[in-house]
Length: 235
Image (tube, rainbow, N blue to C red; front, side):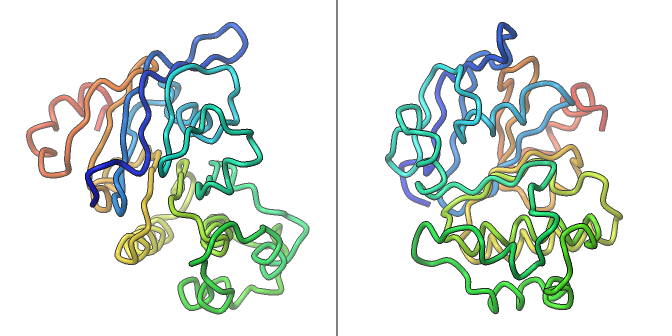
């Protein structure tokens, strides 16, 4: 890791209309890290990801990514800065095949995976390369949503609830994929309700409540934090 974070968020406030959703969120993610936002539903985790991407425009504070000021950047330039966002609803093109989904997004930087490299990493998708998105299982759709970002050459993935609604065997497979991406140097900011899943792949955690980051700690402090996590998350 370098001395400067790849992503730095300072004093982030965000609104949905008149509803004040984020109240001064501070966080940072360093190159090669996997960092998880923890918290119950409705505390602002997804809003934080959407605000970083510029999908929520009513916001104040500072967001810096790879030395670029995202607060001043037009929305259509954010992805080209090297951020890849996979929303909870996955956002694949349902009527297109796996192959078509992979080749449609533009390459934004050097270093992206080729389609064949992606199929080596996601053998399930290779088997279904000619299937439409509507015919994929939930797990296959999640894999495709992540795979599309890897082809574009992004420097960092923002993943919103990647294991939501998936069978345990598929959750394990997603965990293995994220671990492989981490070994390859990918930086990941993860929103995840499944604490036990997150604890196996994350380097650090941020605990959110009421639109704020209440605590940040490395994975090594988990045993000492279980009382707090049980109180806040019910784990």
